[in-house]
Length: 104
Image 1 (cartoon, rainbow, N blue to C red):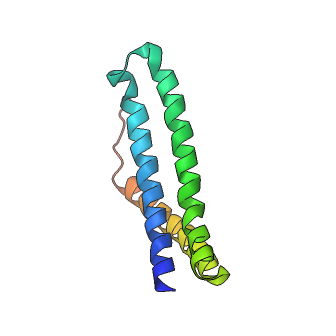
Image 2 (cartoon, rainbow, N blue to C red):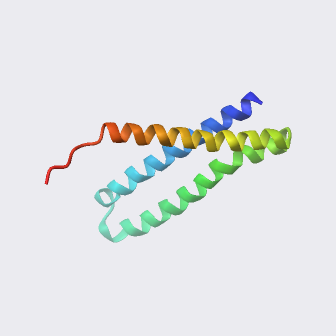
């Protein structure tokens, strides 16, 4: 069952990487593309990322259910959720420590 736990943790790390890359891309999109097409491209990117995030959340557990057994799939899904929770807490702590001060 170790490989299913590792797959869940990799899936959670890939999910956060995809989400942070998307936020960065959407922030800089209007600079790279003209303002006429930036909203359309942003909508397409958000739809693609939503589908990719759902697949990163469920696909590893479905794979392990079909490959070995239901308990391996449940373990993978649990490892994905725990990985998302732990990485989320680490990211929140990191961002709160190293945030920039805004002077008004």
